[in-house]
Image (cartoon, rainbow, N blue to C red; front, side):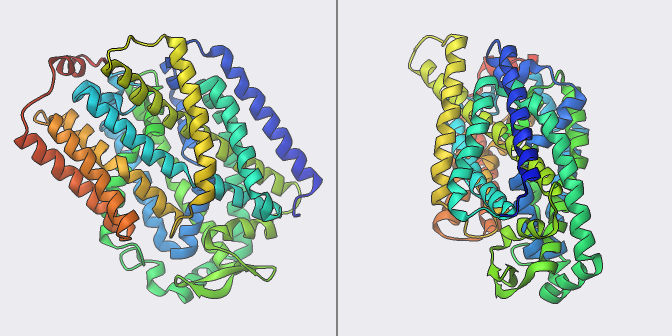
Length: 505
């Protein structure tokens, strides 16, 4: 066990304070809008903190450090694309301003405004499927981080996963978005402190010249050039650009932050400034992975890189970063870093739990009731359904996390599961907002072909992530274009009026 008593004290005190603050959010939840979008009252600074905390978690640090370990400095291309795309969306208001004007609570809700209730349900199913599969590996990876850095026996991995999830479920289910926003501010501060500490320790002990030399020795020029790096190349870079534009505009947890702001102009400022944080979100953990390669990368070559070795035991590349920290950090510092990582974990997971459960309750259950001619639910009943969906998603994540192991780099798995719905959603939203000819037939074709383009090549034909991602966006665009040109115009007058007036049905 690497943890000293002071480390346990720091971690336990943080968890207790975080839970207490999160539970206080319950008193401010008066209706579904409070629960899902915090009453649309977020300002610029709290918006930046909560968006950054939502999209920077232990899983983020783990998969980015794994990219650094596997691909060296070439991995920086992915980080640069994500940050630059976010700044572009924020500066121009591309998609996000128009969606915020519609006063939505979920992304699939737009599909009823523009296309039809049926397409909203189909989109909701695909969003929930892709999002939950995406989140399915979070708990296992986060549990591995905690067991490796603390030195706990691996047999406690499952118990650690369940404990993390239960903590997140309690305050998310009780207080919704309000609890998440309140706790995100504390968690963002701790996360920032942990990030600075890890960066200083990693570069100091590994040495910059040693890191550069190690990458050059192991990978050659491919460790610096994303065009020639394995799994990368032009197709990967173009897919990443499309994917990150889609994430920053149509990813449910990101979009919910935009829907929670006071105005479209504030949503633009939040997105712009968070984009600069995103540059560090990717590149700093990649540096940690390169430092881990320099310090621990002495094992047999697997997948073109040496296995990390610590205390005579070989680890997977994704575990290299926490293993390095367990070796470098002393008592007290280790506790602060783990508390910061737990803060990151709870911010991301609570937001994702709320995001995907909101889609199930608001875009599948609710619209299906309307399709069957049932009366609208009372607001209190909607809140109850949201909370039940939250719990059900959490239970599923435990089992999926135990049963499924991504076949390659976790980052690429997360990208492809997100693409299942993002390709079609991105194309449909752009078409609906900026192309008058886009219609219901095109919307169905885009969503179904986009999902098929990601699922079939990757999960069944075992093609590369870049191939599947490219196919997904290409088929989605082709589907919207062909369906809209050859299908009959089906956009409703209600949809026209809602879009023109900036209102949501």
